Image (cartoon, rainbow, N blue to C red; front, side, top):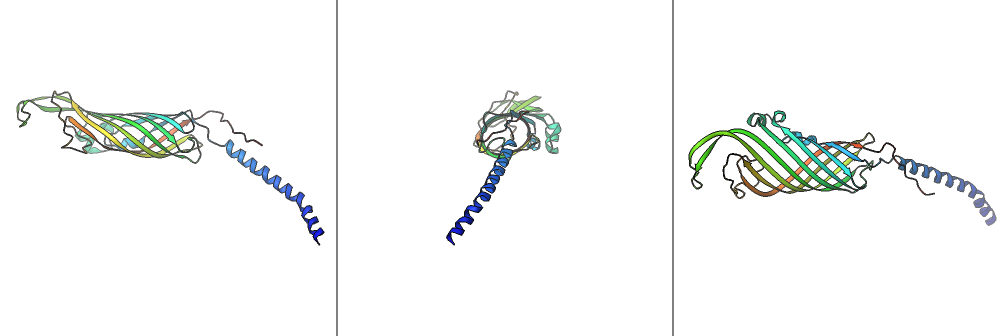
Amino acid sequence: MSKNRKWQEVKWLPYFSKWALALLILVNTIVVTLHAQVIPLPKAILKTIPSTLIDPDNTLTLGLEVPLTNRWSVQQEVGWGHNSFNVYSSEREEYPNRQTWRFRSQIRYYFSDISSPNGSFFIALEYFRKNVLTDQIQSVGRDCDPLTGACAYFQVLPVRINRQVSAGHFKWGYAFSTQSKITIEIYMGLGIRSLIVKDNSGRTMTNIFRNRFLTFRPDTPGNYGTMPGVSAGIALGYAFRPRKPKSLSLPY
C-alpha cells in the first residue's frame, strides 16, 4: 500500500511541474507587461492653475514643473490678472483699474514616482510673491499733523497703490498623471506672510501691525508686519514625455 502511494506521488510530479512552470511563465509575462506600461518620467509639465481665477486678486497663472529625479522636482509659476475679468462684480466696480502679478518658486518631494500610474502624494516648500497695483484718483492730505491727522490742505491727484505680499509655505497634496499626458493635482499649505502697502503720493508709511492684525487686503499705506498664511488650489497640466519610453527588463 505504501509503495502504491509513493508511485502515485511520483506519477503526478511531472504534471505538477508542468503547471508550476506554466504559472511561472504567465506571472513573468504579466509583470513584464505591467513594467512596459509604466508611465515614463516627463521631461517637464506645463500647468495652469484655474483656482487663481476665482481669487479676489485674480490672475491667469501658468507653471512649469521640471523633474530632477523620480521623486524630486522644481516648479516655477507666474501669473497676471486684471479686474476687467474678475469673477466678482463688486471687485470690478470698486477697483476697475487694478492688476495683479503673482510669482511662486517651489521644490517638491513625491512619496511615489512622479510618473506612477496610481498618482502620488507630495510635500513642498515654496516662496510666494504677489504685487497688487491699483490706480485711483484720490484726495491726498498735505502738511498733516501726525497726532491729530488734521491737514493744511488736500490735493487731488492720480495715485498708484502697490500691495506687496511675500510668503513662505509648507504644502502637501496629491498629483495624478494619465496615459493621455494630462496631470491633475490638488494641494493646500500653511505658512507665514508679510504685507506692505505703498503708494506714490508721498505719504509717510506707518507700522500698523498691532492695530490691524490679520488684515489681508488693505489699501492704506503701511507696514502690516508678519502674519499666518494659507494657500490651497488645484492645477491642471500637460506632461512632455519621451517619445519612446524605455521598458524595464527583469532578470530571469
